[in-house]
Image (cartoon, rainbow, N blue to C red; front, side, top):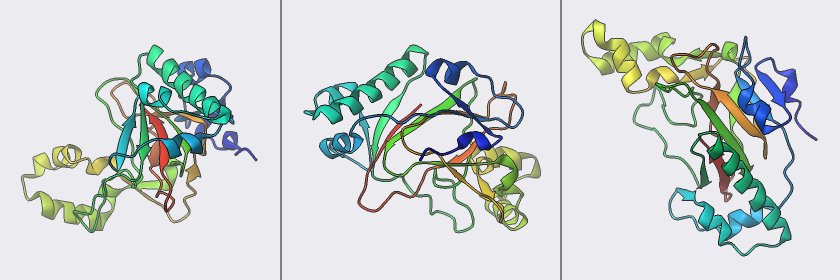
Length: 232
């Protein structure tokens, strides 16, 4: 059964790539979803790729070199078409075979890795596109269901201790080390899983953004299972 993403005010569902790219974010809407059910065997592609590190970038040539069944070929066509569409609109899509991301365990009071709810930031006008073809899928969460970690008193106090500099430079310190990008879910929060096969566009924090950036996180991977993720 398909997820009913349209019931969430922050998500707008579209029916094609052009609408995904051209629809403007407004009001509470900061996530667009081209909802679809791609045909093909993406697990076969994952099984025939070689993981060289915890994260391995898969090139078009790598995909084309795979000897696939008919169902595997269907899956490959969908991935290649997604990459082509994103490239033609000026993006730089990357297909990753993922075992896991690097964990941030430097501090016991705050985490700044991608498993933490966070927003993306850019100095230029851009958006984040992503699609999970196989494996655990990412989550997003409504902006009114989270609290910025740097505003939580006990975390802020420890960051002051860590900073140990002049008051005027504290906010720059928080930005420089990305502490200000991370959020803590409120007790009533209900994260929304992005599901498999859907192509998403998420609002990014940039100088010309009209809406709040989309708060999201990478999932904890399923044990013994890789992820196949397109992102740019």
